[in-house]
Amino acid sequence: LFLFPAERSNLAGVRHILLVLSGKGGVGKSTISTELALSLRHSGKKVGILDVDLCGPSIPHMFRVQDNDVHQCDSGWVPVFVDQDKSISLMSIGFLLEKPDDAVVWRGPKKNALIKQFVADVAWGDLDFLIVDTPPGTSDEHISTVEALRPYKPIGAILVTTPQAVSVGDVRRELTFCKKTGLPVLGIVENMSGFVCPHCSECTNIFSKGGGEELAKYAGVPFLGCVPLDPQLSQSLEEGRDFIQEFPKSSAFPALAHIAQQILDGTSQQSS
Amino acid sequence: SSDSRDEALRDKRTQIQSRGLPKQKPIEGIKQVVVLASGKGGVGKSTTAVNIALALAANDSTKEVGLLDADVYGPSIPKMMNLKGNPELTPKNLMRPLKNYGIACMSMGFLVEETAPVVWRGLMVMSAVEKLLRQVDWGHLDYLIIDMPPGTGDVQLSVSQNIPIAGAVIISTPQDVALLDARKGAEMFRKVHVPVLGLVQNMSVFQCPKCKHETHIFGADGVRELAKTLGLDVLGDIPLHVNIRETCDSGQPVVISHPQSDAVSLVHCASDNKKPSPRS
Image (cartoon, rainbow over all chains, first blue to last red):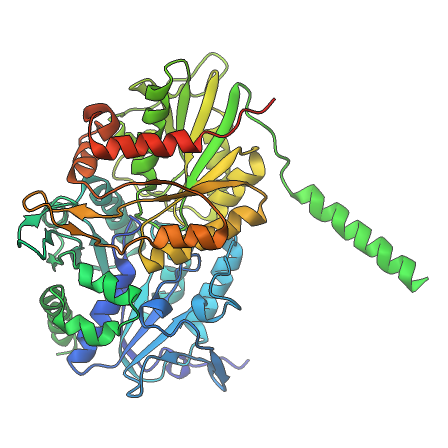
């Protein structure tokens, strides 16, 4: 009976796996996953992003590589690199669709099958971090992803929320999901926390403020920080400008750099 | 003879496949069902669904409006409508919808504890949605607004295959990634033969309360352009206003609490445009 030893799996070269979760949709999971990958790369790390949002894959679009194809190699699928340095690699259903507008209207079992493939069959090579971007909720995609990743011991999950009550409510549920599935919570990020008017610098809390921080305190998990609403970010995507170049100049960058630093500190503590 | 065997095989396959598909059956007492979907999460489906339901009722007090929260994983309606508690059962064993501001509401949020996650695979979700649709004593409703969860999966399929839908309204912010998903949402409704009544552009612009400077935080006009491409109408354009979020958080949706505000007049516009034509 020939069994693949665990050392030869496609995830063997990945040092740390972390998930980005939220109970709520539209809080900025994909944006934060992208920004976190860029911040970690800024610190010299090699990062991969696995996008398991099958219905609304946003990751390829954020890096402007949505028209790229996925190629096969001996060990499986080759992830898509976002630039020449090959420091950030991606996998998403977005690359597998014939047309970018194709809708993926699948029921659970089909989604599970693809997620299992994404976890086992992508030849990531050597990575410092693999960030797994998820859809909102606690459904098939999440159950399958956590089950498929379990043998590779992910370091934990980052929960993203906006400060308002409906988001915080959903994220509380997500915290319970993590507890039930044994997934450590690395911390909570409060996104879209405050908008600074570019004209007069008045800060308005459009989506409220402090909800994420309070939740972290209440649940006894680390609070990783507040990330402000930066209109420049979505504008740069709209206008086809390079998000990768624009990001370091955005007002969200310091907050993300701080979050990335906490992750790096946490992982270096683990290995020492 | 191999041709006739192929044909017999095809017929048999079609027979078996059609047996598996649920039959569409209308819910007794409900005149028209309108679903609010987006594809993308967090664009304001629930916020808009709540305010549109209230606007419909406010525009015409003779109409009875119901609101079904089909988002089993992240039910927001209870908080926004300031409703709590388990539904009572009628003598016929149907759940009685909870009512506030004159709107009959049903949500997964009434059936589970606020902090309990619903960690279910698709099959269980399907049967839950079926119960939320059919095991509820809706009474006589002119409109049932269904607030869909984000995505294009089990819930959307179950609802569209289960009951006849008068039309779908797709909400999006002007942002690229939201429009991508809105397009997929429109495509999904096309696949299941549900007419799309139009698009609503939400979070279109933000006006600084201090200096009145307008910023298009999530982009500008993206929804109008998408509507043009898809040949759909834009039913309304709702700005980002701190009031809308504040009132939803406190359970007093803006249509009720600030009926004179600009944002509300836009919601009324959207609900007016969206009324499907009465069926015989």
